[in-house]
Image: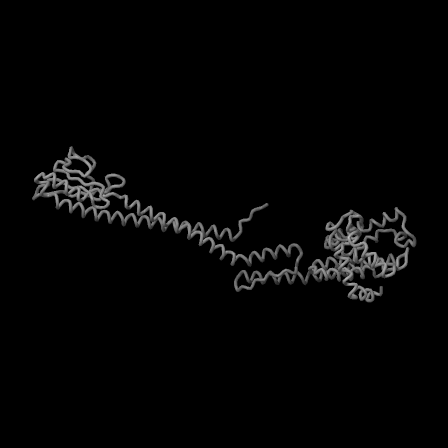
Length: 429
């Protein structure tokens, strides 16, 4: 089975890709903007806190008032997002640090203003001066955990929005694609039907766009094909009537037989509401059902007594001969496949193949009933016309064995309404 990736699927995938790319780009831009904003805000606070610490430690640092220095550092440390704070003397030794005791020079803790000293901390520094002298420096480390939390929350929100938007967008795209592609699907289905020989198909598309123009052109083309096909079919019908006349010319007892069988069969097909192209095949097959008798010896066809076993076997060949003749005419290939079955029985006891039930084409089952009735109600070389009641009784009793019960039922509906009798009178039977 070949998988086809349809237009609807392509549109949905294309929209999904575009949506993901667009939302992804917006999300990246949003993350970058939010990160820059958070860094800028953190920088402002860091600078303010560093200046605040500077103001509060100038005098205590000059007096080496460690208690006041520790109090000032601790006050800054308690501010939101402050990771640490410390004070260095003019030689770079730690005087007070929020997370350590005073000690030696604090290597690595004197980063420039606003630069991170480690991945999640930004350090802000300010020199402590007294007159022209620099007596030390203050440092505030601002943690970036709040920025990480804000970015994570934004990321979750973007993902939820993306998933929800993608689902809504895919559903909307599928609905729109279905709306726009449905006429194309109708055209494709109609094309397949036309390829099968159904020229009664029309595409119900009424739109003022390219698809509507295409549908209108298709409908016009099918209508033109139907006219041309009808003309050709009429030519075939004329030819088949001539062939039927040739068959009947060999056997005076069957004159008008093919015409009547065709008329009965067409009435049955009409009751079954068969499509036009099937009705054409039914009419052709009914007229030509006995064409194989051209290949049967005239002595057998006109023999006034019952046939011998060998003669009966020869007579049983006429459906196969007819099929062979018609298969040589390409437009009648389908008709050939019907007439070869017109002597098959519904219970599988007919000839030439012993087909049964639904294995027998419907057209052949219809012709079988029409042919049997006309044969019984007409004179033959070996017998006179059967009484009408006997012909009808034989049809009834053989429903389900020789004949399709549904076809027999329809035949008797036609008989009871006088249709069969009108056909017989019209053909001088």
